[in-house]
Length: 482
Ligand code: F0G
Image (tube, rainbow, N blue to C red; front, side, top):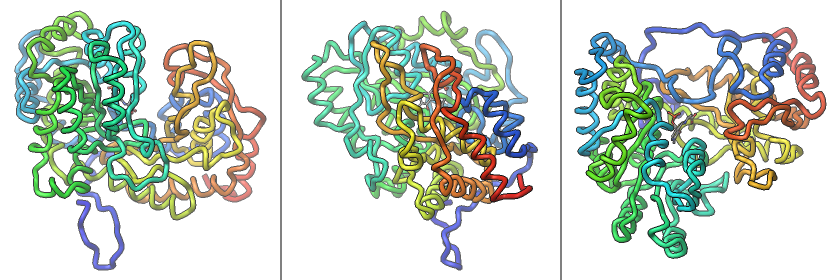
C-alpha cells in the first residue's frame, strides 16, 4: 500500500504479500559473467536464465502468480471449442471493461497483427502517443506509417509532468488536418507508455482524444497491456479519481475507445492476450482472423490453464495493494539512483526504472549503442539483466542509415511481486560502482544484424577490450566477492 506511514518517518516500500514458493537464483563470478555476455553477443536477450542473478529484462510473462491463479489452473476445462474456461474468462473481461465482444489471441503482438491487418492500408497513418516495437513492426509491415504525438516534454528525461504519455492535442489536430481523416488507419493510445519510461496517460487526455476521434469518425485503439500501472497513477496523481474504484476507472477508459487490446503476459499476470470491442463492424472484421492466425474462437492460441490464470489475475488486478507494488519499487530504485547522481527517467513510471545511458556514458556515441553497452555492463557488474531501449531497438532508415533513438535508456523492469527490497538495494549498489567507473565502458558494433527487430537476435562485439578492463577493476574493488 503506497500511503502506509512509518513511525520512523522513513518512506519504505512494503510488500503486501508473502512469498510461499521460491526459485533459487545463481550469482556467477564476474569473470564468468563477462564470458556469458560475450557468448550472448552482448545482447541481453541472448543470455541464459540460469546464468542470471536478477532478471529485470521484462515484466512480460514472468510476474508472480497468486495461489488463486494456480488453483484456477487446476480446474481448466480443456476443449478445442466451447470450453467453460473461455466463457469464464469472457465474463470477467466483459465485466471489467463493459464491452460487448472479446476475441482471444496468444499474446499482445498477435492482437496488433489482427488489428493492423483489419485497419492498416498502405501509406495510411497510424497516430499514437508513442510506438511500441511490435506495434510499429506490424503497421509498417503492411505499408502503413506511424506518427508519434507526445509532447516535447515527454521525451525529456528529467521532468515533473505527471502524465507524460498524453497525446499533444494540437499535434493531433494538425496531423488529422494534414493526413485527412480517410488516410488515418486509427489513433492508438498506449497505457503506461512503455518506450518513454512507462509513463501514464491522463483521463482528461483520453477524453479529449476520444472526443476528436468520434467527431472525425476515426477509430480509437487502446493498448491496455500496461493498464494497471496507468490505473495506479490515475488514482494517485489525479484528485478526480482519488475515491473512484479501479473498475469504474477502467470502464470509463473503455467507454471512450473503440478497441481495447492487451498482452496478458503483463495485464493479469498470466500469458496470452485479447481484443475487446463493442463495435459490430470492427468485431466481424477482426473475428475472421482469429481462427486463421491464432486458433478457434474459444481459445485463440492460449492454453486453457493460462486462460483460467488470466481470469483470476485480471480480477486481482483491480486491487491497489496488488498493482501498487511495481510502481513503488520502481520509485524506490529510481530514488536510490538519483541520490547517487545517476540520471533516470522522472517522474518514475510503472514497468521499470529507466536509466539514462547518455548521461551514464556520454563518451559512447549513439552509433555505438550506449544503451546496449550499458546493459552489458550491468550484467558484468552484477549479474543484473536489463533491456536496451535506445538506438539498437530502432530499425534502420530505408537508406540504411542509423535511426538514432530519441532517448538512450536501459530498462530495469520489475516483474510484479517478484523482487525484494534488498535486491533493489544490491542493484543500486552495483550500478553506483559502475557509475564511478563509467569511463571504462565502451561501445558495441554489430557482428550479425537482423533486418527486422534486430534487438531480439542481433549479435555484437565490444569496440576495444573494455569488458576485460571492467572485470579487472571489479576484482580490484571487490576482492574475492561475487
Ligand atoms: N504493447 C505493449 C505496451 C507492450 O509492452 C508489449 C510487450 C506489447 C504490446 C506486445 O505484447 O509481448 O505479449 O506480444 N512488451 C514486452 C516488454 C515485450 O518487455 O515490454 P506481447
